[in-house]
Image 1 (tube, one colour):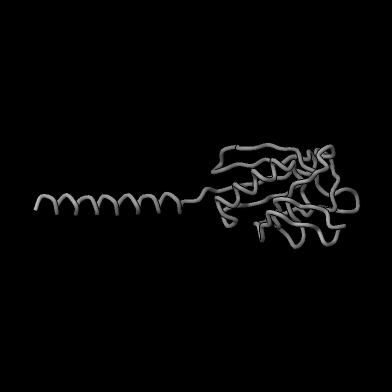
Image 2 (cartoon, one colour; image 1 turned 30 degrees about the vertical axis):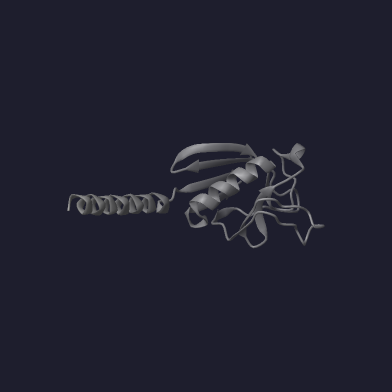
Length: 147
């Protein structure tokens, strides 16, 4: 009898631990990505706490990056632009039609307008942002772009 009681208590405790684990994994953080075109910087915060501050390149003259508040629409770890010479767009987070935040090999131009309208990041920063948005969820991510 004592053995069955111990087994029953063990099952109840195991079940409680599983439920607690599920509750912990289903909680998502609020990710805010703020892109300032005038300073060519991206600030990323999680649940209101600053996490990252990186240089970016937004649209050069004649190729504007849209202003506004957006949410990720699609995410592609590996993507190549069909419109611009099959250019690589690693860790792309599409937020408005064909506009995306993505990594670039043209890192010397970060900090100044250089793109066809996308928001370019250092490849390591793009991978970090992609992992964060993947983990916390596109629905919990807001992208705000201002002048």
